Image (cartoon, rainbow, N blue to C red):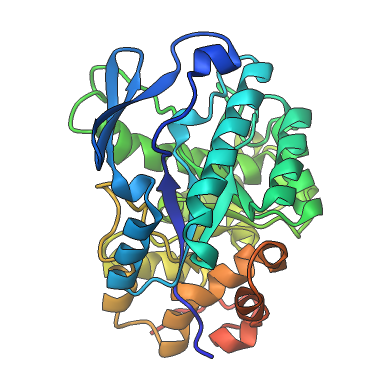
Length: 365
């Protein structure tokens, strides 16, 4: 049986949701201005946030696009504007439950090809763990989180508590940058997305390393960073150099240089050019890069997987691993509790099927 093509980075927006002020309390919630059967605008107050269309909520449209791009399975995650980490925890719990249940409705229409990830009220670790458990029981396969909660990064004690729980229950974690800083220099040319997102992701990877999180949480934690890990892979040498030369300021709670931890997390492949993908594979290892697209948003990759297909430096085994084998291991057998026997069989494929050996960080050339 061929290894399926698995896209781990896609987003969902339901076509409508309850009045969140009435359902959750508070004010200023996102709402959906429906402009036509296939087009809408996410609104925050009276401000237009993002245009969205049928691919966000219509399973047949998603499946048709997947077929056109040769994608077998999508991991379907929330759109970060709904995270609500800046709100009181009781409100964030309510909005998470609403959108998590709606996500199950959207993905159910796609059968076993659409794998739902939930959101949680990350500002309250106990509530976040409880919502994750509820969602896993209901059919979600993992969780998407934002890369920070206000000024609290991923080494915050409460977030570490949640990540430890994810490791214990076997829930894969997808980290997406969000809530980027603004200002005159960043509020033009989509600079918050073009420069802020890579920087935010870079900072949060460092937080897991220098904050000592990887030294504390179980190695069973499966965590993946969006957008190729941001700028982290390009500047790993700089981080190592600083760790050695200015350890008094840089080492934090880490026990080893940053490069020692690249086998503790994954990144997706949304880097668009073969040269960038080669750097990513050389830095992280061919077993640590997962296919991602950021579907269905315009800054994503279409056709999905084209950078992997165009990268002639990859061996056939490595290409197979990036397109699907690595993702199956990242998703783990927890998906099988809610998916069909066919997916269970796919998830049982071991590392040898992908041609990647544990710890392989060699150049693919």
